[in-house]
Length: 384
Image (cartoon, rainbow, N blue to C red; front, side):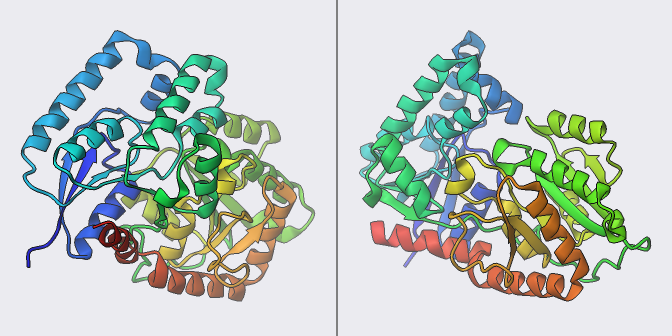
């Protein structure tokens, strides 16, 4: 019997970890995956500009027409398939995908993963273009009625979509975030202790509101100003680029922080090398609604690299993650709680080592590419 064929469809972010994990996970589960993709977005700034009203400019419409013309051309070459899967983000792609799937009488799955409407609210885009945000809300609300199955990572987010968009919860299925262990894996030769004795902490990401980067900087201030001598040997790397990066740099400069280093955006291989040099990986610490609804890759990538992880306590975290066993948790938006968590882990190397080992073991059991692929494969087989 030949393998089922999956058409992975859309203008999705081809380089985004979620899409790469699902595609590879499906292949490991025995599916043949045909990528039907056309580029539309140039990057994070490009998407923010479009969501701030740039989509109304003729040049953007021209880009869309070209992208969807290329997408249709590639679709004609895909041949027969069993299921059409729309990659993230797909709030616009789902409309075309629905038509194409119906013409072939094939089931349609949409990896929603996140809400573009919620993202625009949290980034303050309503203040710049209220009309755009309302359009996104309506487009997303209607999109939730098109797919046979929709994928999210937490039941809390399913409830949000039901409340906000009146989406049918029976159409949703859960697929965890996970991490791509092809890039994020323990080094064969462990990084030696810092010769100067520093406890090395790393934040990395896109500096979005739910990451709570201001909380990290405030925690760094508390650590630097503390009378405890050991706190002087804690150093935090801030890696990445995003909307709250200037605010974080300005805060660090105003406080005269010498225990924080800013590093620009890194490709994943270089990022993994940076993580490997650190003792502790930071998750997210914001107070926005998004952190209550979904998880982020950093936690799982830290697990994958066998690093201790410190993140905020939220209802969205999987029940399998136990505080003090797999991950160390502090309070959201609380610099003192974060600083205390860092101090505790610095002072307890055995706890740090145990968290790293047990987090890595749980990752191998539940959150690898193979395990994520199995979760999605189960939903596909149920649908078929």
